[in-house]
Structures are given as structure tokens and as C-alpha cells.
Length: 276
Image (cartoon, rainbow, N blue to C red; front, side):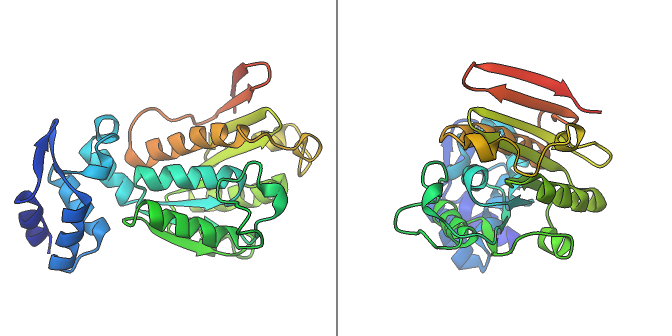
């Protein structure tokens, strides 16, 4: 199958930049002609040093093999609302090949100020399902699986099965502790993020690390219950989290393990705190 795919796209790619480029329409034709998925075609192209056109603007930073690793990987996003929607958008556009989207909640009117996939028309709709539909509209190479459930000790391992990295878009510290515990057991990196008002934080947590919310004895909802969340804070933190996930999956750059990045957008203050 791979030889047929490569023969098909090599005859139709164009020279542009450092690597030959193949269009989305040609990749789709190759998939249909050779009985492959679009994702398989794009992976084969990248391993052969041919860049699918949708990744022209990322290939310079990730390289062909880094982009291929993204397409071959799986990320789980726990929570598809404020932080989750923005992370899902970035990961789909970056080309993470499989996304597990976990959320048992539905959209409410008070989500409209900050949640990317919340609209006036879909109030009451399942968040995970809306996120999966958006992914397919953005990048049909990506397999998006909506898991409409709230994660807990009983279902955590099943919901996170196959994930190479887990991204935290939860709004409570009790559920964060549950998910991080599952990640420790599965030896999967946990990319933490939290927002409240003008404040936010992000960190990559691995097995053996004491989570920041446990260090300070934070309440379940913390100050978010008092100050709410501004529209611009979630995309800021989500970008940091998505960047760490992409680096982990693509195998590029240095990680931010055991370092908490904390910021205050009101005072334009940012601090890096060491986690032991």
C-alpha cells in the first residue's frame, strides 16, 4: 500500500521550499486510489520527505519526522470547555493524529464569554461531541473520538487508554488529582493548566512530582469561583499547554517538567517556579 501511495503522490507533488509539497486534494485522491486513510497517506509522505501542504508552515519548526510523529501520536484532552476548546483547536491544526476528547458536560449560556466552541445555537449540546465535529472540519486526517463522560477513579484508565499525553482542562482540583493519579499509574505525561480571572498557570507533571494544587492545599475550585475567567486567559494558557504537548509528541525542544509557569495578565507579571 505504501509503495502505491508514494508512487501516486511523487508523480503529483510540486517543488516549493526545502521539501516537495503535495496538496490536500492529491492526498485524498491517493487515499481513495490506494485504499488508505488520509492520515496514512500523510504519514507515508512525511517519512518519504514530502510535505502535505497543510503542514508547510509547521514543517520548518518540527521537521518531516517530527510532523510524522505527531500524526502517529494520540493526545487526550480532559475537558472540552474553556481551556479544552482552545487546546483541541491547536492540536488538530498541528496534526496530532488522534484526539480523545473527554467531557460529560453540555454548553450553558455562561460559557459564551470564553469557550471557543460555545455558540448561541448550541446551548445544551454535548461539549465533547461539538469538539469532535470541529476537529473533523479542521483536519480530516485527525481521528477525533468524543467520550461523553466525567472522568473518575473507576473509568479513568479506560477513558485515557492509548493516550501518549494527557492535557488538563478541568475546573476542579479533586478531578485533577484523580486524572494525575491515573497518568502516574500509566506513566503518561500530564500537561496541567488552570485559569481564574487574569491569572493562569501551566506545567508538565510526570510520575513522582507533587502537583502544585496539592502543595498549597488549594480548594477544589479555588479563586475561579470568586473572580470568574476572562475571555483571553484560557487561550493564553491553552497555547502554553498545547506547545508542551506538541514538543513531547514530536520529540523537539526542551520540556518544562517540574517547572510551573505562573502569570498575571492584569499586572503583566510572569514567574517560573521550580517543582520538586
